[in-house]
Image (tube, rainbow, N blue to C red):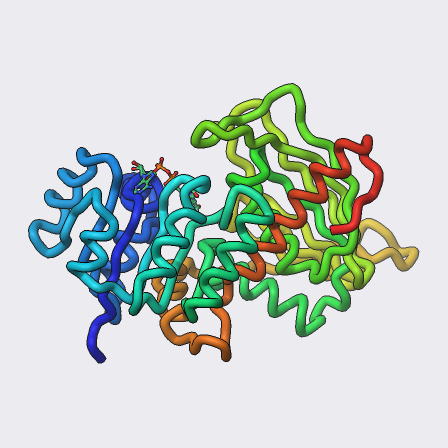
Length: 337
Ligand SMILES: NC(=O)c1ccc[n+]([C@@H]2O[C@H](COP(=O)([O-])OP(=O)(O)OC[C@H]3O[C@@H](n4cnc5c(N)ncnc54)[C@H](O)[C@@H]3O)[C@@H](O)[C@H]2O)c1
């Protein structure tokens, strides 16, 4: 198979830098993932900041063309696969430019898709009109641990899912949007929400206000969820989910570092028929989810299949955040999502 010519736009944390962190064991950035993927060829890297060219040259020598000029780079390389890793408020403008350029088949866009629901919808429409397969980097949707849990929910091996408690930190559009995406992945179709925006600390991300929140979500299948996405600094990191089933419980600790799996069993603390939680050890090895994401994306056929994380689930996250904001303005009254 001929390798797919690829281009990364934005060479900051998500595009290039996160993989310079020696403590990260799996691939986190688009440059590294594309460079390692057997079917892709990283041909170009773009950043409006010229100084980023130095790092690209150091890492990839002359194999990868660095440029600050998108149009020039597109004409030179004619890529089919593009990763967008620039600040969120640039995504729509970039997709507008890319959708006018013939030959692009795949856009792998960082999350959140846009700065609001309208922008996200516009990005989805532009990709649809240009027959571009759009994927969003809610990367846990390609992560074996999180997929194993989804399978447990669908197979009902612990009975029905009853409720979800999710614990994150501040900034709904930033790390908490990953948490919301998983809540929606597991919970199903979210119906309404009561929310309160955090006011005592508001994070600014790329110059935009991005507050945290507390929310109570009701799903159409009866599942309920309490989301806590608050903290007083972005440096506090918490990413945990507690799923309660009819016949057990699954707890995701420390961003999936540990999974705790319980079933209700007879206990030695009571002879009166109460069943307690009995823990079973679960050990699922980390997979290279960014590589699996790329494989999934390039295996999609436009109009026939969607990547595991596409514009669709990204838009659902936007709608949830919009409803939390609306509810908070109405003093926590339930708002439709
Ligand atoms: N999936 C994740 O876990 C994850 C992690 C971090 C960031 N993100 C997302 O990735 C996106 C980028 O965030 P980041 O933290 O990598 O940002 P960053 O500030 O670290 O890097 C952004 C880079 O884009 C460049 N840039 C800005 N506008 C540009 C333009 N119009 N054309 C070309 N280059 C441009 C900047 O010079 C900078 O080098 C955001 O949407 C963010 O939410 C996702």
